[in-house]
Length: 386
Ligand SMILES: [Zn+2]
Image (tube, rainbow, N blue to C red; front, side, top):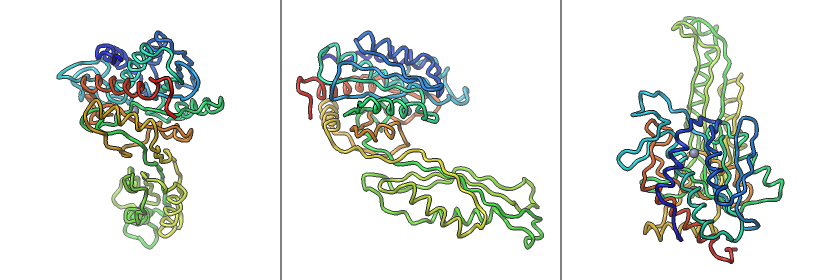
């Protein structure tokens, strides 16, 4: 069994970074990925929805279906002065590849593609299906990306058994930490209405900001119910606050706050919304609340994918990975309802969404090796694991 060469992973990663695919643009990245896969016998099926490019690619047929999932879109680079060089001109320095998307997640995507190519070269007749689900809508609204592709696959009666996302999961070296679940995310916006007036005549006004501050104080002091011990506890953050006219002598008649919950299972958005409503009603006779549900929590149960990946990591690095459920949301939330076992393994996450984003060359080579070993263990034998 040969592992992909670092040179081939690097060549694809650099070509992907050179394309400024700011979400939801794909900027030709999926053509590059598709060319590489097609040259190794994968069948390509582009699945565009609206402005979003998605690629579904398969090799082999039948079960089990093992999916490598990822995204080609990136977050904007931010102020150029913060970068040592152009964010879209890949630069190798000190054993690292720099550029927007290097870690999140063009590096991981390149390693997955090259690992899959190595694997099908060695096992052209492997059992089951090896698939890629690549979207350009992970960093944005995530409406027309993975979610829509999964809906389409389910309509066809196709449900993946295993899914590996190459998102940046690692702490200090690729494979030291893998993600087996993610917290849920719920954002809300409270607007409290009072009566505007002169600060010298508070009896003729009703300070909306004072009421809102009382609401927020109660939310911050709210009892944190126990969640699944595999997850970090419920977290609450106020993100934005707006009130006042800018003048020092006017009592604000309106005040707005935006906030977010990150919650573990078995908590659910209904319970959180109910608690917030109760607190709002206690302090503000006139308020409106709007909600934006970012994603439900999921926890992938232990199974053949986890066992194979842990064994591959132990064999290559000498240590088993830590199992984590931290971090933000990922497209795993859209794949979880299919019942697939889902794990995230990718490069070190230190620099994601920052200026001078990087991935280490060592991690790229190591990921290529780990992904190939994983495929060898899952689909490399004539009898696929149950
Ligand atoms: Zn990502």
